[in-house]
Amino acid sequence: MEKGGDKLPAEIAVENFKYSEKNEQLVKKSFWSKTRKFAGKIPFTKDAVAMYYCAIDAKTPLWAKGIAFGALAYFISPIDAIPDALIGLGLTDDAAIIAAGVRAIAGQVTEEHRQKSEEFFEKE
Image (cartoon, rainbow, N blue to C red):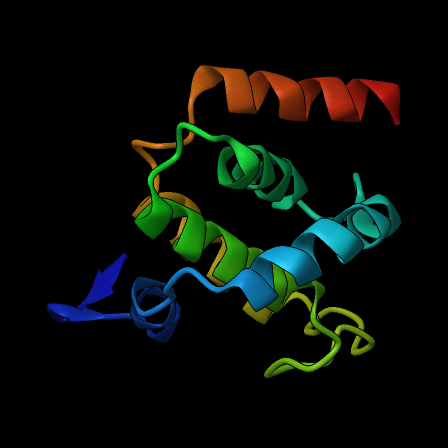
């Protein structure tokens, strides 16, 4: 979503995410614990799970992995622009980053990734 032809800050941020082994390791280590904590409580968790499956897919290009792991690392990081503990506001920055990340790699998130996300939520 653009305002007056300018990109929103979250869109600019995710476009600058490059592949980072550090982000990949953080996401692989901590993604599921944070996701289970918020599953069903926030609307963007299905997108985040689909993005996770896209990020770990061997067929996903490195540039898309960089965006996905960067956005997901932001989501699970305890340090972000608005602390998650602030009820009502704490996850708005996370939601913006996840939404911008999903848009940035939309062509890479496949039906298989979305299906795996659905299956995760059916189990919860």
